[in-house]
Length: 166
Ligand code: MG
Figure 1 (cartoon, rainbow, N blue to C red):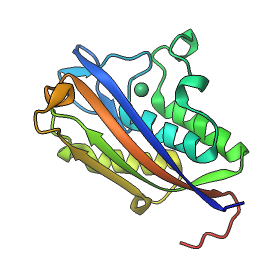
Figure 2: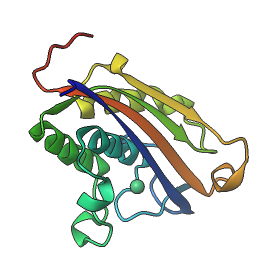
Figure 3: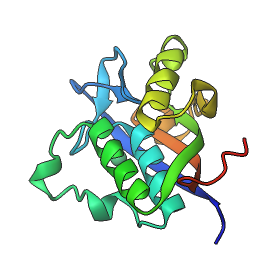
């Protein structure tokens, strides 16, 4: 069996006034935030789905259905922690992750370092094993119009206990 596996994650949330904007576990000052059952952290949801994908454990919606009141306003950091525990139980640990956060405004430049550090902390990897990129959609579509936030993540996982080799 291969000692490393890659996983892919994607998430999108509608944005609405009066909601808190949390991305990669960091509160970002904004006038709009995600409409979501949980805290709507699209970056962490994409990362969590990438972890599940790499570990062959299905997807976030199966494990944390938005119809379940237990996950109402849940912290996505908590959800990611649970996903990592499931992956660890299946024998997989994070190696590195690369994330795109796609948002028209506010500009995420001033928050990228904090988001990267927080992601490294949540995943238990070094900061240099975390890529965190922010971009806009140049005004195109609902994301470009500022009505949604999206995130993509690609994640490498290794067999727990396997030779580090990196
Ligand atoms: Mg989500």
